Image 1 (cartoon, helix red, strand yellow):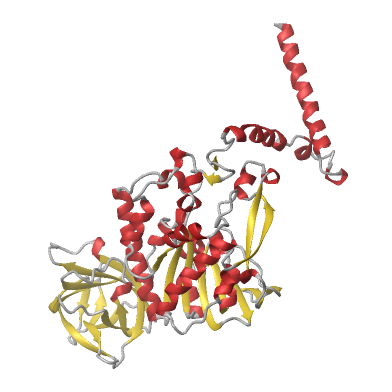
Image 2: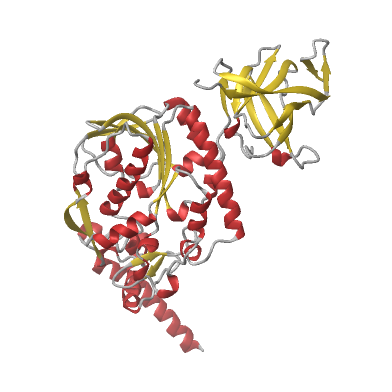
Amino acid sequence: MKRSVFAFLLTAALALLAVPAINIIIAPGRDAIRLQDKSFLYNMDWASRWTASALYPMGISTDPKQVIIGKDGWLYLGDLYQQTLSNDRRPATESDAQLDKEIAAATKTWGAYLETKGVKAFRIMIGPNKGTIYPEHMPSWAKPVASNPTDALIAQTTGEIYIDLRPTLLKAKETHKEALYYKTDTHWNDLGAALAFRAFAQQVGEAAPELRWPSEKAYEVSRVNVRNGGDLAKFLRLQGSFSDNDPIIYGSTPSVEITQSDFDTKKVLSKGGNPIIGSQMTPLLVTSTGALNNKKVLWLRDSYGNSISPLMDATFSDVLQLHWSEALKPGGRFAQLVEDWKPDYVFITVVERAARDTSFATYSPPSFSPKSSEFKIARTTTQVNIHDLIQSPSKNEYQINGVDAFVDFALSSPIKQVNPQHLNIDLTCTDNTSSVPLQLFWLEAGQASYDETHSARFSIPTGQHLIDLRTIAKWNPDAVISRLRVDIDAQNSCSHFILNNPSLDLKAAGA
């Protein structure tokens, strides 16, 4: 027993001496040796690296959650990030379909909201997962299946907003000798990004023919460099053991001079050239001298926008960049940046594995506009009930007298074949409150009573304003609506107000 304990202690002591010795021996130079630094002396990365190097030829990953090993030197992302492998290998489920419907509905509200703000084109481009374009290099068990959750998302998001780049890149890989993705990285390379941008430009150009785009030469390969392994190789600590071909396109050369500034502080961060710009968690304004279009773009993006950034900055004079997760999160800055900066176009670039993130199911805020002569009344309403309110003889004047104040209105006729897109609400507070929180309820055919599902909360400016109903979450333009209810949620303000009967308005022909 004593011998066993002694042997164990001796082994442990030798190990404690051996680890620092190995780190000193393999240090790249004298300057890298830090004898007083325990994190240097007892760093075990070399053990992980040697283990990964030994197991790699057998197709075994030391970190399969992050990396799986394919064929011919190709590495692929594991399940640690958005369950990439598992989601690609299974058909879409009912829960997928429900989320996709929410994303589609939310996207429609953003499209309508941006239209009311003068945005000329709103597009979302999906950067395909590497395994989607190059499944042939994956282990057979890891290959994506047909009709996976991405297909279900695209099927739900009918219309022109989503740009599915999978067909474009699948076709392009058959005609280009260079790969479109790095073997050892999760991302497309400059060539893949350029061909994706060209397809994006063609589709946006149909909606915005006024725009100029890079010439065909910009998308051609000028040379192929060799670089060290990418992020997947780094996860295995084998970045220096791998190399990757790096096709450089003509569009990557500086054709413009850019200035990068912090949007909030206005501080200039850098000037010159047209470098690749990484994804930004705070708004970054890129202004370009010599861009093809003197236009403003709000670009919500992730790291799949890195290789696209020189082309985007060469095409548009002002590009405000922010990671989509920061813009779309609760309390995010999407609407605020649109209101403050007033972009001409709004684009989103998102990698396929993140395209079904619940952030994309975030609805836009309602869009309000002052009542104008461009609109005519299509449906009037009549008050049928009030609650927790005292009504004055003038009928449209009310005093709050409880915690659940609302006015219930019946439409002159149900919204049916002609669907008005705007609700006219004329609300004035006697204490001059500038905006009031409301909850709007609507009663669809077949509903016995109002419910939370058929309602929306928002603050409305006082005075006479039109609400664009396309920007109201869960408003169904195809439903038959017969009643509306306006709940006043104001607290400590607007206890005395005038609310004229709402109307549903249509834009006059030719307006």
